[in-house]
Length: 640
Image 1 (cartoon, one colour):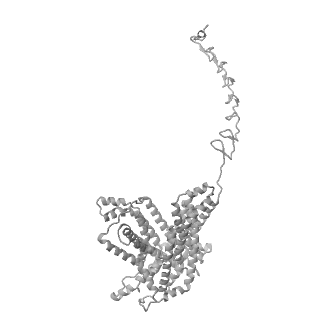
Image 2 (image 1 turned 135 degrees about the vertical axis):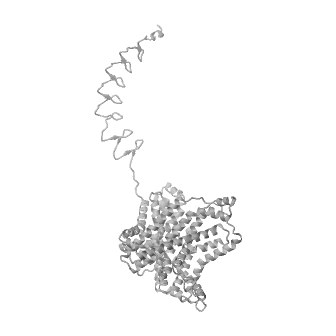
């Protein structure tokens, strides 16, 4: 018989099983040919499976009251099995590939300790005094804010601050446009002279202008002899506003000049090609793009002038033009009100709120301003044509009148024995200079100012170097907060800083000690060093530190050996600026004055108020010349 006959079709109604045997419809064959009873279920390996028992993945019976794990072992409820079957301890976590993953917490190292120390130092010199002032102000002294003297002083401060800020922006913008966008001759020398009032202390400028436009000045004497009345007296509100403009327009000029250099020259050239004249292109294209810079300069100068003390005290007090700064000085020195600390703290909180509001408005406006890329091509200067010499002459006259004439007036007063004496070869004397140098408080004041300024420079230099390096060379989350807190006092008037330290001084045992002035110096001038360090480091990539870390250096050593060394020259330059500024400072020293701790600025102020204006002028001239010489040496070092 052939194979084809044995594998013939089983015929209709019959089914063949897996091995060719006919399969009856009432019988089921399992996976290995064994007959399968309908009342029995066969497991995966052919073994009969009882309906009351569940078989696990490997054929082992599984009890209904027990759950079998992936490998047949019963799991314990108090133990967890990881993805690879290994037991998982509750205090350990298993990673995605079964490896044990420990919750490793980075141990604090030296860099963390430095950061904590920096935060504590900033909190001590910034948060502590301002927080104490706010707590002391409370609500019980709010009634003093509606007192007649306070309302009048507040109105005078507001008017002088806003008017001087508007004038400073106008003068600074005009000079910036003339010096940057016209072909006026001698622009470099004119620019340096125009910025020089920023380097002279405001109270020294006030003393100089008293000799130039005071009632006994040569100009007013000459005018009175001919017309019976003086031409103009610098005393009073108009003199205060004018001097505030003179000493704040360089700041506006710097801000507007920086913005002007970022305006693309292509815009003006496009306007010129479209047919606009050069003046029209300048006024309709360039000037509207300076709105952000104009607003910033106005806000900054207004806040700075709001609480200036030197100019209103010298020029405003003789005409009873009282501002908040001079009123606070009177409250603190004379004690004419009950609880003077609480009253001045309330006034200080109001000034602090105004300053912070101004900064917030400036930041809000800054987000809306148009960002311009730096111009690749230099703008063509506006040709003045036949007006070139006239504009140059007027610019030189204005700049020399507000910069060189006051210094010449100081020199004239220094060479005269008393105010009102005409300057002739017979009246020239060095008596005022000798009196200024041999006065009882001059040597003591100069000594106190020098060592206070030196200590302030060292403290601000060290702390500013650490803070500036941390916030630029590390990636910690608190960098922004630390940087903001360190530079915040820069936007707060010196009067508020003095009041804040005056409030906290009795609790710290610093009252009537020179250490109080030193603490206020650190609060006020710390931002100078932080900004000096922050600017160059923020523009330098982190490749040097990363290379040091790749070579095995720790975070602290990479920061110390690389970042701190790079930032050290900038910190030294900032510290020199702190020292030169602190030597000539008056607002903080006058309000925090203590017996036996007069500073140089207080000595000059005392000579001016105590009947020795010529000696005050002589000492002011010496301080100004020494300060300008020091700044001329310090600025190149800070730029390198």
